[in-house]
Image (cartoon, rainbow, N blue to C red):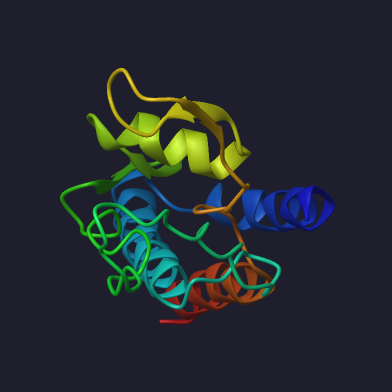
Length: 151
């Protein structure tokens, strides 16, 4: 994936150099919105960028005789636009989590150890890649750039 991104950057760099800063900023803003939408849809579908499903939740222990499963999907609120922010300039695009949820997202992105609750036991989380570029995202960037340059 890094080689594909580097090749896209080299190819697009020459084309973007022809545009003035205002046009580049407008283009990067549109691309960033589309990429954030794709990230939100992928998180909702519970898939890593390579297409594999997220590691399932660990089963809950029987607490006070309660049985059942957690019905809410993982990261349901994390994918909202208020947490998944985009930042674009004429030269760059950045999409990431902000605020208190950034720590939670980092733990899941890299599969780190963390406490489930304050004072609780530490747990090793399975890696669930929340952010990442897919091949479709790279094609989207290329297509948007060509559309913008064409007219």
